[in-house]
Length: 264
Ligand code: NDP
Image (cartoon, rainbow, N blue to C red):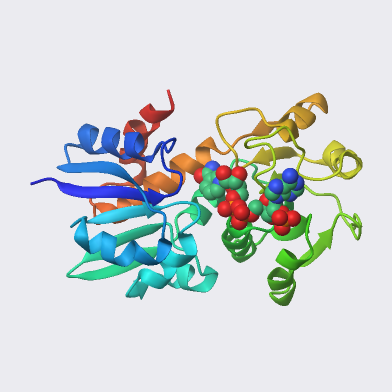
C-alpha cells in the first residue's frame, strides 16, 4: 500500500503541490501518492487527517493556524510563529512544521549582500518569513495597508508603518510583495508614490505570488530592477516538506530535479 498524502485548503483546485510531490515520489521510486482535499472547516482538520489514514499533509490558505492547533508536537520554529503548513503522522501523533519560511529564506539567498528588507504586507506569510529573516540577520521593516495587522509585529520589535506613517529611514535592498494584491486583481500592494521612493535604490523586487507578472513586478521591471516571483519559494517549501514526509531519506538536491518538473 502506498503512503498517502494530501493538501488541505480552500480553495485547493489550483494547487501545484500534488504534481510537485507525485513527480518526486515517482522520480525517487518512493511508494507514495499525493491528492488534494478541499476542507471548509479548519477545526475538522485533525479528525479528517486520521479518517483519511494519511501519512502527511500540506496545509494552505486559510487553515495554517488551525493546523498549528491540530498538532500534538510542534517544531520549535512552527511553535514560534504559530502557523503550520506541513504535518507528518508518526506513531499516531501529528507533528507540525512550517516550511514556507525556510523556503522563502532559501529563495532570496541568491541576493547575497542584501541586509535591509522592506515587506509590503503583514499577513500570515509575512509573520513567519519576517521571523526567519530576522533570525538569519536581515533587518525587516513592514509596511501594511491596515494598522491592526501591524500590532503583533510591533510588539515583536519590528519597525512597522502604514501607508500614512511611512518614513524611509534607510535604503531597502529587497522590496517584497507579501500581500495578495495582484493575485486576482491588478492592484499594487501600496501607493505608487511609496514605490517610487523605495524601488529605484533596491537591489531587487520579489513577489510571493507566482505564475503571473503582478503589477508590482511590472513596476519593478519598468524601473529596470531584477525581479523574482514566488515560484522558488513554492518549490523550496515543497522540497523541505518532502524531506519531512519521507523522514529525510532524500537530500534537498536529490529531490529538486524531480519536483521542479511541476513548474515546466
Ligand atoms: P493574508 O490574508 O494573511 O494577508 C494578506 C495581506 O495582504 C495583508 O497584509 C493585507 O493587508 C494585504 N492586502 C490584501 N489586499 C491588498 C491590497 N489590495 N492592497 C494592499 N494590501 C493588501 O495572506 P497570506 O499572508 O496568507 O498570503 C499573502 C500572499 O502570499 C498571497 O498572495 C499568497 O498567494 C502568497 N503565498 C505564496 C506562497 C508561495 O509559496 N509562493 C506561500 C504562501 C503564500 P490588510 O491588513 O490591509 O488587509
